[in-house]
Image (cartoon, rainbow, N blue to C red; front, side, top):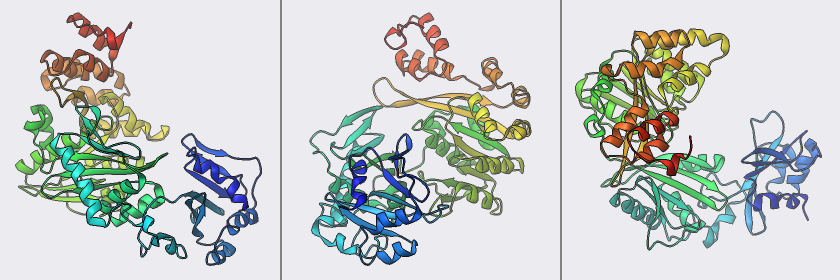
Length: 499
């Protein structure tokens, strides 16, 4: 029995997503908790090559012998396992994982010497479907159901029927049978762009947008879990939304008329940041005569140029990264730049520089309050640069909208927004590293359109849009929220208990 067969059960059990064979290191399992050694024995380069050479076909042995571009499939326990060399590793390292995609016989991503394995009927690229059209039709039928029911998301999992997120709750679609890996893989393969097929093969997850012409667009995330392939498809309106439809205040709308500065829309994943940004871009598109460049991953809302000229770029399709597109934007005569996500230090730094040099920059962060947003940006920098960044932020930051989505009474969801408009007082607090006092400024400057998240949530309760328990759960400052709700006579003990 090949020695490799002794460690593959760790992968087959689902407890690890990959195995690493590396020179001068023990065999390691890649798990959600990180890399875990499977033994104390440190492998030599020759031992690593010996392990994989023992299971390589005659066609693949030359690559193993040369220790260059090793990539082949190995069949064990009724499944196929991809053994692939990592070319950028500092020393010889190979990754082993289960091969779950269903590429066709001529797919260039299938290793040479293994394409014959794809030619059996059970290995059709579209799983249990006869062809691509049938697979696409099956998933589009589910997407039409999603839109007809007004669901925000469609969850597809092996071993489960299709599941919708309706009004914040997960609901299984009645009458739908459970999905198997072949059927689900076939449906997703039918709508996935070629670039994302290669990305999913390499990384086991990928994001892309899909559109049904007479319906709407969807943001698709495909991943792997212990059962096999899985996906989440989010509904995106086919047209743009307006600030009026979104109930965005006049004070926030005024930020759209700035000629320079940084405006941030923040909140946890799924809080509607992209929809709010879409409404702000639509307002500028209708009222200004400027060049707007958007950098997104993926493009969700498609804007048609109205008074503005709009250039939309998708990371991985039209540009390599947020930072490269943002740097290039400075040479593309922009007036307004939208950055879908300020992911890293370099992107944040370029965004700040762009805002300082006479451009209006809009971006998002995954923070829950205005004060935490400022702290997150400053903390990205080394300690010796943080004072300088506070000065830059004090000058460039013009507004922060931090939002969360709440379940609405009667169905649907509504956004609660904390609004910070940066004036001289706020600039001074940022510059002096006194962000803990920003909440006090928001509370005392309501006449300028500022509002804390708790005030916004309380307004939704008073206007009977949101249940008090929901407002309490969505609050960041729960002790204050609980006291204010109880003062109004609401009983929230079911969710708050003793504070």
